[in-house]
Image (cartoon, rainbow, N blue to C red):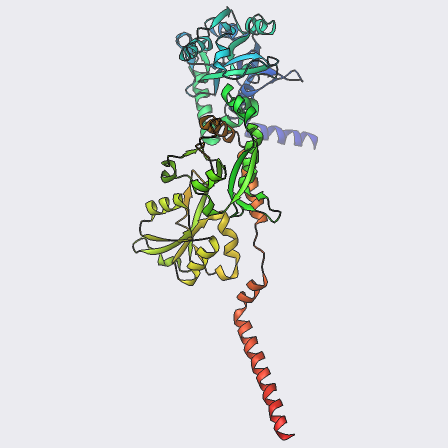
Length: 535
């Protein structure tokens, strides 16, 4: 029996041969470069480059041998001598193009950075006057050194530079305090350093020997497929390993503004739940409050929130009450052309929906009446551009606009999707149907932080510096936190039924009950009167 089983297995093996092929081994140059590539606590290679190569392996099946190198100069020498097959991160510069072949697609991005030791509290980001007086260290024959000299000329600075052979000598000089600052790759950043400047963003690539076309073709195909199948992979790695690429760094003027600015009074709309409203506790609540609090945390600016009704957002009222900022302004060309206003970049995006009792009425050919809340200049502009046949009718608030659409005073109503959602639950507005094809997006809105040109007694207010601080802070907002705020605030804004809603929903039954009750009462009264006549 044993012999038979053996013969069967042997026969199956012959009938179904399995090709066993060793994985292709690729030798990769490896030298310490911050979080781009490093040795972790377990003694294994780790970092941006290692994760990127791992993703390539999923496509190519490559196996890697990491060949230790002291620095970039040594690594390029090993590649030129055929001791390694692949190296990164390489900028596209003539010296390298002469010797090596580049991948068709970049594998990341790097910046030039000016570093000082973290304990140098006297040095501040982009303090040009101070930067002009520093002693610098830079590597010979480095693209970053060349870019630094070009960057310095833009500020009329002739830097005092000591040159070093490689990055090891360069960082040794900084830590030994032989120089005040050094110029190098931003990928070298760690907690012992502070950044004084960032400039010259450059794409970086894998390079290999010019005659290694087989490896290069596989590499190009793998990177292309990665970009097509997982387009956010690169940005995810940047966020994981190099969050400081986008970290907020304020320059000297911004630093002084934040340090000296008193609490800034910000006007907010009181009746735009869940975006912006006054809660039962009398405080500012909503998505915009969450975002503004986060901007305050990132920037260091302090905000005081002041409730304002829609009609109080005129310039005169705001100036008289020393309100420099309004939250939740919807950006449009009309607003952007206002001479007394300055706008930050948007910090929240949303859309509007159009609804009516008879959606089929809309064909785009005839004039129809569209109800909207007054004061929405940007929305009027977009409606006029996209639906020129609509005749716009404005109302004091959302309730009145919805009533107009239900009563026939208007054919349709338009409102922000988050503000509108609770109204569709109300029994009296359930006859409204959303036009699925007429949603109007406001990509620059819903809330744009605005400041006002200071009055004569407010000369200390630097509008451009303020907006620069706000913009840098907005760029650091976490999209996931904003999404969570929208979800949570919308959930809190669920409509709560009232007795009036109950009566409205069952008004037919209530009419019948009231009629029956009235008839019963009339019958009883009639009987009583009839009995009285016989007494």
